[in-house]
Length: 289
Image 1 (tube, one colour):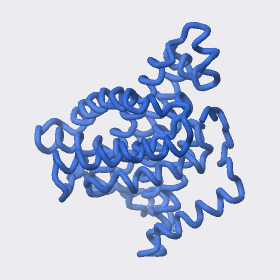
Image 2 (cartoon, rainbow, N blue to C red; image 1 turned 180 degrees about the horizontal axis):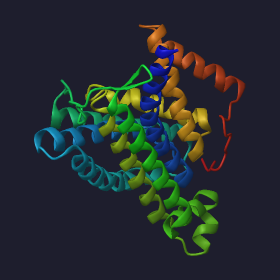
Image 3 (cartoon, helix red, strand yellow; image 1 turned 180 degrees about the vertical axis):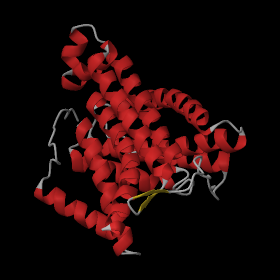
């Protein structure tokens, strides 16, 4: 039972990061009807920026994260302008365009930071907590707390602010939203900016858990995308539940099937999707393509 609970908590921590990635996928899809396969590369860029401000500029970890989120938010606006022509286009064109842009971001990271990658020390050097015989890494609790706060703030923004409600209206019917005076382009830019910010939050938090490298965006992007699909693509609660589920499955698979954990994780994912193709929440909010 002790090993089970420790594995479960570790999976929750990793799953919280996948949930943040999945939220970025779902937010952009809800607003633009665009499946942004370059999102994993944005996670990688965010991880590099956060680690640079933390390790090179020597900012405190929290401040480094805030600055990196701000910089990546601006990059998100630029990405939206680049990918805007793909909005409402054929899925194949969307697929090729966003994957191609992701490759460009990966090449850019290699030019700036090199191909070798870097290790990021934990900003919380405290010893693991001992709770009823279960050793819990303090940083795991920090990751869970930050991800929970970010999710609550996002939901409050979408439900309680004029800008968030406008984004919801665009997600439901962008033509009707345009007719009542909502600026759809501005709403799309906001979605990309928030999505890039969430990607950077995920990348910055995962840095001390994994190795920051140009290739990390691929693995994180695929698992975040799987989390969004598992929860119900376009659903905000689904992205959270799906991301955490992928993290927990991944953690148990790594503990019991070393060397085959990725295979086991995606085998379980495939079986769930075969049973429920629309995901747990089964939301079909947007289908403009």
